[in-house]
Image: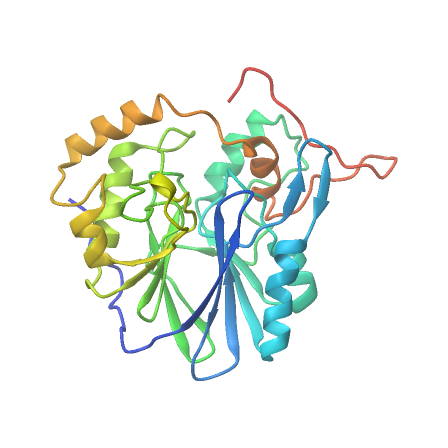
Amino acid sequence: MSDPLPFTPDLAVKPEVVAFFDEPTNTISYIVRDPASKACAVIDSVMDIDYAAGRITHEGAERIIAHIRREGWELEWLIETHVHADHLSGAPYIQQTLGGKLGIGENITIVQETFGKVFNEGTEFQRDGSQFDRLFRDGDSYRIGAMTAHVMHTPGHTPACMTHMIGDAAFVGDTLFMPDGGSARADFPGGDARTLYRSIQRVLSLPGETRLFMCHDYGPNGREIRWETTVAEEKEHNIHVGGGVSEDEFVTMREERDATLSMPKLIIPSLQVNMRAGKLPPKDADGRTFLKVPVNTL
């Protein structure tokens, strides 16, 4: 059984959603605008990295910044649905340019504690989530212009995963993929397939016409990249949970599938950066920045 919804959806509010697809990481970032004002939020932005060269750039973030400036919108929030393991966050770069508050789920502290140990971070690395402006709890809300955004805790992929419901649009992070993509893996530290199933059921308890926006799409079977679906479509057609798949069936499938998966290519830089709210590790005495590679740990 899934927990009840901690809020009442307001499907009469229909935010404008602009998507930005990052091909190297198959990530979709979003600008969500209040239709009654110029206020907007950015969800799951990307910072570019040439990992082999150790080079950081900001082309993806600049596309988002350019769109907001071109439209004359005002950025109020930068939202991370969770601590991503497959791309680096571009939120600090956008925030430095356009302002806004940066928010993530309160269980970021669990992720920081876990991976602070993995990467052998010293005591100077704060594990209290203080790198972020707001730590969301289940049932919390915040405002984007005249819109009220609601936050729902949907762990299983990671402990800090949150779904953000803004009007008739829900941003699910990695909890769900498009119907032909299924669901997120649940084998990272702090992940759990049974918890993921219950979180998915919570998302699927939203009204059927709710628009769902994915954080990733990989174009299964060569189809075009897509990122928007509905609760009704997921309930009927999702290959992992649709059509009444039971919790035990899902857990067996998910655990067997996860055992065959390789680690994401960018997991090492992503976790080190994203647990710091998208900031790079502190510079050394010579002004250089380094990322660590833990050996035989992940």
